[in-house]
Length: 132
Image (cartoon, rainbow, N blue to C red; front, side):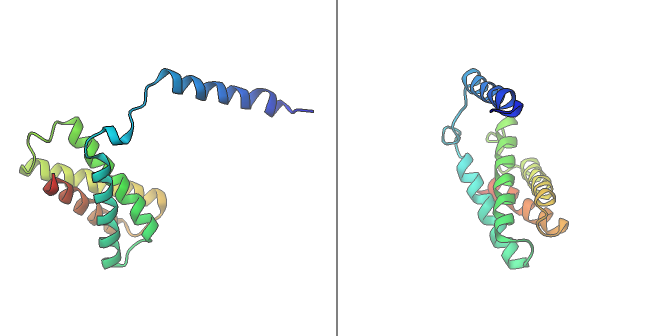
């Protein structure tokens, strides 16, 4: 005999999931120019700098770097930074966004020291700015 859980909660969750997918078009990540490139740069930079400083786990550094790359990319797209790339203000903004994103991700995943996360995030932001 089905319980209240399976009779009410699960069908409600399924209905909400189907409705949200049907109502909100989703743009695939590959359709956003350079997003996957920036995520890869972030993950790679974090793994290398984390390995050199022996701070944090490899998996944690990959997750933090990917989140940092996505955050820097999103900020650059939202502010139209491609017009002003390689400017001093853009470089400082990308470093600050990278440092903040990697610090938050590092705290959530409990990965490495806070100072190490700040340095790795800033390095990711600067590298994305230079390569863009």
